[in-house]
Image (cartoon, rainbow, N blue to C red; front, side, top):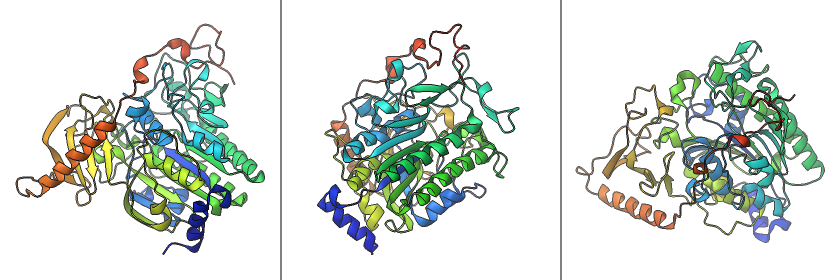
Length: 502
């Protein structure tokens, strides 16, 4: 039975947003985090006390999916509720000198919440474009405030990535011949190169100020925290370095956990913890090619760059004390579903576009059934020629194409690395991912002809979905322009070495 508070809250929502106290919304998005990386999902040496507390006191998903096995496309899907093929954030990811970015006519979560009265802020890794004069930064996509890095922290020279103590260089390979990574406040560069050892402290302070200021104004708020952790190469500041038995990956993960802990303490201090939904998930699976520095997919097959479960299924936790009862759900969900769910809870108006997400309110508050019965799987480079690589329908997943990826190299499974070239399957490879989440044992259609009905149903759903899909022009294929690279001294010379400011 749902808690009385949840029943009353849902009733008030039906009366309209003015009749209910709108919940505050905190969305935390980890980077390159595998299904098996958290202690609450089975890792024996990850130290994440704050995430463990959220998992213990909230709703933990076992079947939650991203939309792409790499960064930028998943981030676009998270914020718009639409597959990356609709928004043009494909193939691959955006770079510091990319011409394109998330189109400004796409409606983000922040842009639907602002008209409903929300204050909005983002901190961390944006990775949805920079563009001319910061065209695609968060402050042009519905966020009132932003502090963070506009792309991945490895998209600059490695020499500005140091671990604690400061004279120890982080192990890893980063981009060379380009500017050091900048820190942005709103649309201005405030530091270049970024001081990564102090960055999480800055994020905690930013979140604290935003939450306390919003609470003092009695204003509902949306805080989006797309973390740099645990993307390779890992780094960790003074509070986290050397704290875990898991090494650099574990230290980076515990630093993320520390910031989450700071956010939770501030919510308590502001007196808004019981009117705040905190949702945690991640953008794609682990980069297995980095071995112990790349994360862990647990029992799932392969990882980043692939459309196997290890590349696409993610941890997800929803925490809202007094409203969401603690437990585990096996209902299917996706990052696509966060926008319509937040809109429903906030009483906000949905955008007048095709949405691929569904409202998970019934799952979260009433432990009901999910409206999501299917999940579509695009590769890193979707095209109309090949379209979907795989489709999940209920407990069945059909692979129409399989391919490995360099991101998932070094594993013993020969299906994971880049040498596992594109292979078409007709009939598709069919797995029951409830009984075989590792996708080890394809179901035999000849031994069980009744499964052909499942295959035909999946083919029908695939065709129906593809009929609705109009590929937007690729923003990433617009190319690059070195003059667009962020530089705090745009008129300086010689570039890129002169782009420095404290």
